[in-house]
Image (cartoon, rainbow, N blue to C red; front, top):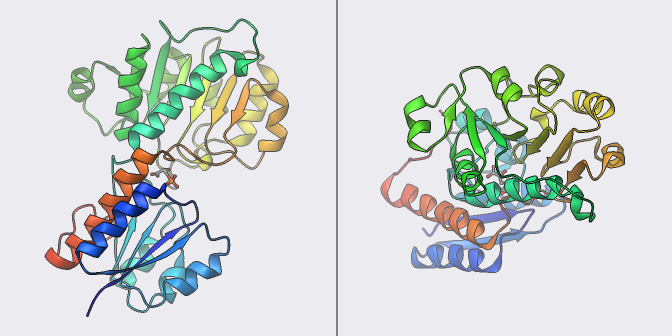
Length: 307
Ligand code: 3PG
């Protein structure tokens, strides 16, 4: 029997990406059902009921979604972070959960550097700003996005440092950047810090006053990761204490409205858009579609993230 696949994207992919996904499933003779730009979580719960596979982005695949699925065998998060999927619920129902690591990383990295320029130039308000050349940038968690941030930052003439206990110094040296062994050292050393941590129970609120207060004069924090990793009370305290502190985020927190008083030292994209480029949509979306076909046709479980 032909497989039924759902594309559930609250924030829709660009058309060429949807065309690419459509082609992969048409070639495999699978049926594709699209639920794009939906506004009610209940619509996702209803749509997942009868499908065999699903592609999502940051869509919340919590237990009510997973438990509503009667035939689901695979869920693929077209992107990196899978903190939006209830992995335990998937495992309990023997559903394979995957991500598509690396596919949208360059898009996120370009936005991180774009926000650095925006903040260095005072939100383009015409007043004299500063340059990135010669400044030190610290990458907090050196994965796929961190790698691209490092490469682009080097193009700007920045000195690049990274903290990541899971990545060996040799790899960082090969990439032309310096490994910092102690996270506090990273914050002490770098005017610019770019966050690329996943959201886990250990990272929530981990970017706190103790770390931020170590940053040198002209401090600029960029968050294109998850809002929960930054402690908002700490941010508020720092903004009030230091007139030089700047913060740019693609994942605005709950205090976004209040933070706007600090503009142009504060900037938040109106909607999370780090991965929102045609190229990233095509890369991640088509990779997700191929992973689903390879899973059903070949039993391929590369990129499985649950037990
Ligand atoms: C990711 O984890 O891949 C990014 O945060 C992008 O998320 P998005 O697909 O919802 O834009």
